[in-house]
Image 1 (tube, rainbow, N blue to C red):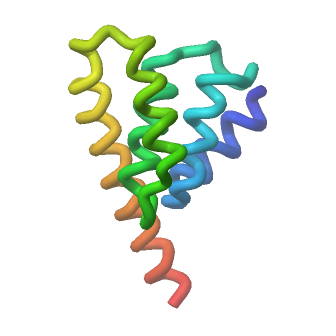
Image 2 (image 1 turned 180 degrees about the vertical axis):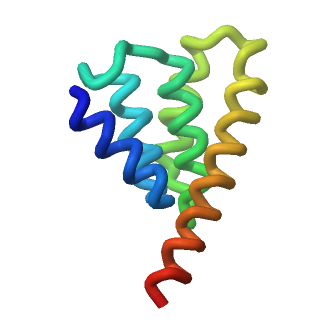
Length: 100
């Protein structure tokens, strides 16, 4: 578990949007973290924002996940997801500039 958590954290620090999807999955369906529908939603939403293309499957998954959340929490989760997505994009930009 600890190794998987470290890997996910390092991938997120590197600005990899796929790491956001992996974090969502880890909070939704794995034993890496305790199940947490709110965090799963937040990371899925961040992944959708940080990705270069909108994936209809991700949008469908978000709509399904919203059914299990308290409606008042969704705006808060989206705001945090936006912050995470911006950080991810900035880190990806810094990483790509470092490689060039």
